[in-house]
Structures are given as structure tokens and as C-alpha cells.
Image: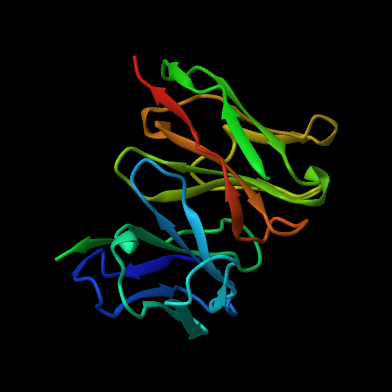
Amino acid sequence: DIQMTQSPSSLSASVGDRVTITCRASQGISNSLAWYQQKPGKAPKLLLYAASRLESGVPSRFSGSGSGTDYTLTISSLQPEDFATYYCQQYYSTPPYTFGQGTKLEIK
Amino acid sequence: EVQLVESGGGLVQPGRSLRLSCAASGFTFDDYAMHWVRQAPGKGLEWVSGISWNSGSIGYADSVKGRFTISRDNAKNSLYLQMNSLRAEDTALYYCAKGVGATTSSYFDYWGQGTLVTVSS
């Protein structure tokens, strides 16, 4: 099974900051990586897929990059509504389609 | 508008069974794979199971393999999860999620609001 290691587990930042969250797969996943945002009491929301493709309706301040085993989610200028928990998920080849442990983004 | 509505959760004793349902609308159900993802209280997301458009390909997390069975009824636009031999560690909010293609290898573009399963004596 492919393990996903996400870091950091928590992050404090201010409005306007640029933040980066990292996800590392235990083997290459050929850009089969998605990022989700989850707010308290809500279902996860898809942000990006195929490592760098922005889901329709998601603000352009969100971007993704990476290849092989290492991937990043970047928020270029944090907005108040971006404080949430973020998860990566790999969907390469066969199940299980594992998630990272999550990164809780908090207001500094 | 895509809608996924889960039902069937509740309080159940260890070792007992429960069947979750997910009613789908707003898209052509039998064109897409479907999945169950769970989230234990205060914890992260865990993919549980997925099923391809025609039920020809099915997968499970190791933690539920042999105890849970996923199925779908395309005529009823419904997804199911039969959960047997439930354990305390199965306590979670169970989400139904839509894949973006016909096969199980997918990310999830729509999620339901979840149904809570609590396993306790």
C-alpha cells in the first residue's frame, strides 16, 4: 500500500501570508494526487487534482506542484476563509486510495 | 445539482451489523465509480471502499476487508455499505463520495454530508 506523509501537521499563519504544505508518497504516484480543504462540521471540498489542476470555482491563489513522490500545495496569499484543514490523497493505480494525515491551518 | 445523501448510521453494539445507504441525484449515476470515506471523531480522512460503475471492480481498505461489503444499484441511483462485525474503531462519520470517472482509481469531486456510526456497548 502507498503511504502518504503530509507536513506540517499544523501551521499558524497570518492573512496575506504565503503558505506551503507538503505531501510525500512512499512510492511514485505519477501526479495522481488531489488536495482537499475541510472546514469544521463540513464535508471535504476538492481543490486540486492531477497534482496541479485547479478544480472549477477554486480561487487561483491555490496552486499545486510536484512529481514522482513529492508534492506541494501553496496558498499564495491567505484569506480569512482559508483557515481550515487540508488533506492530500493519492489515487494511483489500485486501492487503497490513501489520504495524508492532514494539516490544520490556523490563524496566527 | 449533484446531491449525495447518506443514511443508515446510528448506535450499534460491537459485533453487530449496519447497512449504510447513499442516494445520489443530479448526475448520471451509472457513469461513475463511487466510494465510502470515513472520519473518526477529531481524526483525519480514511478511504474505506470504492466500486466501479458496473460493480466490476471493488476495493477495500485493509482495516475493513472481510467485514464490509460495498454494492450499488444503478436502477435506484444508490450506493450501499454493509458493515458486519463492527468494532469500536469503526466509529466515524461515513461519507459517500463520487469519483470522477468510471473506474475506482479516482479523486472525489462531490461528497455527501455524512452519516454517523457509533459502535459502543
